[in-house]
Length: 130
Image (cartoon, rainbow, N blue to C red; front, side):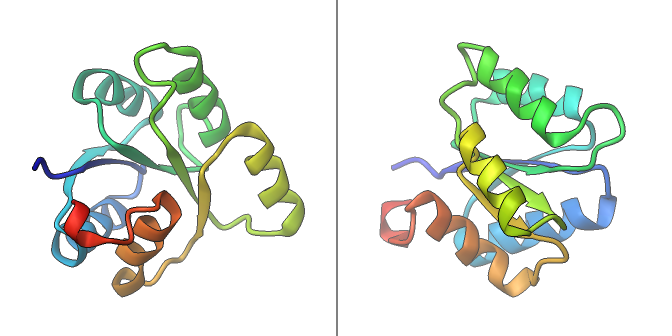
């Protein structure tokens, strides 16, 4: 059985590191990191993660545009994307859901809860399946 891989795309070093530690320790996931949208798109294509945790506010391209580029690429279009965002109003949630975003995780997130939120959002709740 192979360990699931998650790509974390966020421009904040602390967020990337906390997410990596949380997902590795709490859920036993392999975590790949990217600091920009373009780096993330490239790593998504080459690494083929099982899911992507994507910040909405990135310096080179926003999360929605990044998601659209991933969707337009036949090699990455089927990878589920979860947005990390401070925008958690109902209207934003509906807009993101209509785009095909798998779920939203609010920033700031609680490191101890991040892994569980990601697992539940992806239907990976049964850790024995990982």
